[in-house]
Image (cartoon, rainbow, N blue to C red):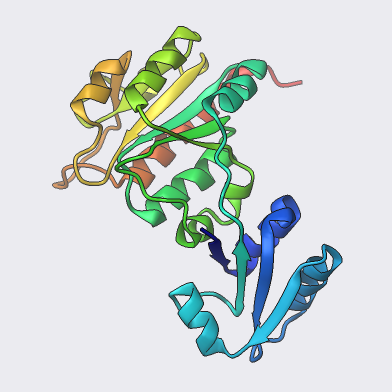
Length: 249
């Protein structure tokens, strides 16, 4: 099944990193800009077919009007293996991995992948069930970060977390009822952060596989933070600790 990608930034990032997957590039006849012209030149230089059409056709193919006048048709996304992620993580210590349990909103998933890339995460692990597929909406929400972040899709998340633990990676689940605050933990050691879904958080079975459950302090009358916001706060705390732990030259 082909993948549809839209938006200037995601399409340009994809052209630069996985142009071999492009089948066609669709451009709205009504849009003219230097960036679009440069993108068309990039595509043609790689031998990619460029099709000009009415904006209504792009709306229909993208399923949205927010495509910025550009749409790409790609061959299916190639997931990384857990072995790929572990190889990268263990070869560049300390490892930092993001595991998502039940994140089904495309905007949240894209935002988490974007933050993961910016915070130096070695890979993102998703379960095959109860997870948003890697659609154009996810890619656009990631602002192109999906092209630079290995994502693995696994059949059994619990078994995968147990494997990470055997490799010496500390598994920390983020939940409001956590035993300690995320800011009290040493996140400079090899760590896998587990973020739960929007509706019910981390499943009980997955919680049992975590070495520790951590919380983010909060005030107010809401039950919990949005999954993407909570994940962003935890990942930036991990990056902050790692940056400040390195002596400045």
